[in-house]
Length: 86
Image (cartoon, rainbow, N blue to C red; front, side, top):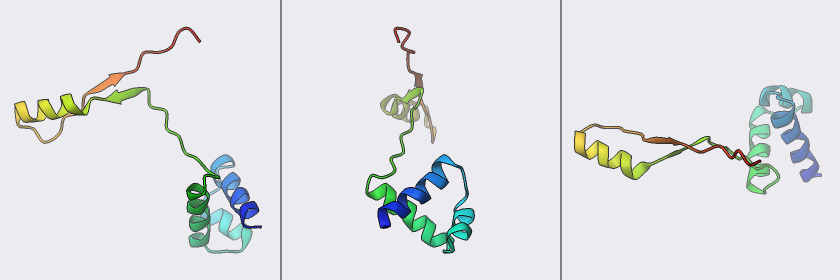
């Protein structure tokens, strides 16, 4: 039953776009309960979040530039080449 509830809450939140508050009202539980269910679903691998970045950050070069120019922050962003063979 717990897996079924985690699956339902995950679908409503991530696929259907309902807010945690909307799901809580629908299921008759608190928003905190929904938050805990979603976290448990992530912890158990029921939900996996993957971010695909079209770029990479060169931290070593950023550090070199920060030191050389005495600045607090420097981010070197390199755009990934698009795979045109697909």
